[in-house]
Length: 266
Ligand SMILES: Nc1ncnc2c1ncn2[C@@H]1O[C@H](COP(=O)(O)OP(=O)(O)OP(=O)(O)O)[C@@H](O)[C@H]1O
Ligand SMILES: [Mg+2]
Image: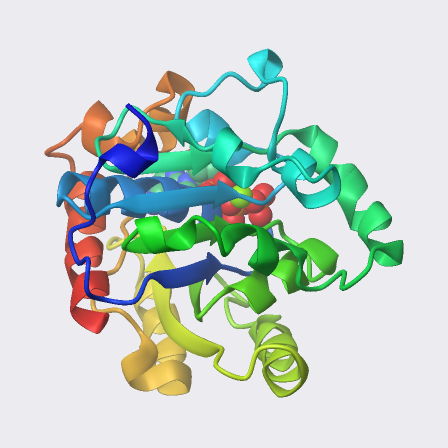
């Protein structure tokens, strides 16, 4: 059954395209894309996940073997391959995925000389996005042309911030890029929200970091904080989102709560 055969949960609502971005590495972007999309799918929302990071962590997080892929998102971006044909089913009902492989690394350079190089991703999702309630784009840890494409394609941004020293370092850079894209390429771009990840309730540091980020972002911060949880870290090695791997673990419940908050926000 293809993605066009399943129905949207909110057919009358405009599709929300959300890019998950932070140029800092290892803060929980891919983990959030996999587990939040899975929780939304579990709640019957129809979701498209676009892996836009050459590392392909979201692709493998959903158990898709990158070695077996003949085509990936790179082919849609630079070889005019229809995105439609790249959309795969996942282990979660209602969740579909466009995979990425290391091939996408080449796009960062090849895009430089492409026509309308910042808006290619936006263009290719146009034909399919109305089929979904949510589209999530997982960004690489940089502010290069792939990420700029994700900023242009998105309606809003979700920024995961890890509970650690210097958590806010670099965040101003994301906001600057957002401002630049907003003024020149995507007037409607908004900040959807900030989610704190890898919270450790045993340390004072985690609490301090949450307070600090709260001062900076106020009500843009999601109330749900994602705990540091070993099941979350284990799940990708089984190719499963946490909700499938350990449904009643703390990490799984947190992502389910986050999904509810996301739906309430729009
Ligand atoms: N809540 C959590 N509890 C425990 N481990 C986590 C949690 N969130 C993420 N991790 C682990 O931290 C590492 C980095 O997470 P992830 O890959 O999601 O970050 P990222 O921001 O996508 O990284 P990159 O910038 O390289 O794309 C992974 O090994 C992941 O399994
Ligand atoms: Mg990642």
